[in-house]
Amino acid sequence: MQPRTALYALSLLFTAAACDSNDDPPEEPTIAELAACDESDMQYVPFMGPAFDDNGELVAPLPLPHIVASTVGWHTPENRDALQGETQPPTMDIFTHEGLLGAGFAWSDKCGSARTISLWRDDASRRKFVYGTVHSAAIMKGLKYTRGWETTNWSETTSDKPPTWDDVRTRLEAVRK
Image (cartoon, rainbow, N blue to C red; front, side):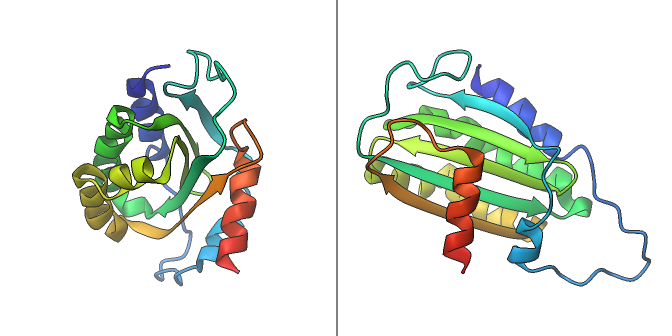
């Protein structure tokens, strides 16, 4: 699967807006409340990158240790198009970075959420992407279009396979507490 496919898949996140039947502005939810949404409609883009084949399968075990980073954000329905514009550049840029092992993407229309998992050879490579011009600009401009956002990363020393989406949800929940 090519990075362009990931871009298309992530753009689908923003095609369905959450609706509120009340005319009054809704109370802002907490991150815990946003994270509790049932993402049973979650759609996935398989892992892509140097460590994965065209079907999203590992070509060899991941090196130990490696870095896992995960993010989840919840868009505001009225700003989904603006946020989509901000997420496109880093979604493509990530695949140009030395040290990337792979990245996977997922989204839930029902919850208005988008998730990422990225795998890195080392933390210096992850940091170069995160603090790089493209990603930094997207964060600075895009956060105002979200209802909430959270992220975590860790050094994986025991598993040579990528984490599952449930694994990263558990990690994010632990950080949140």
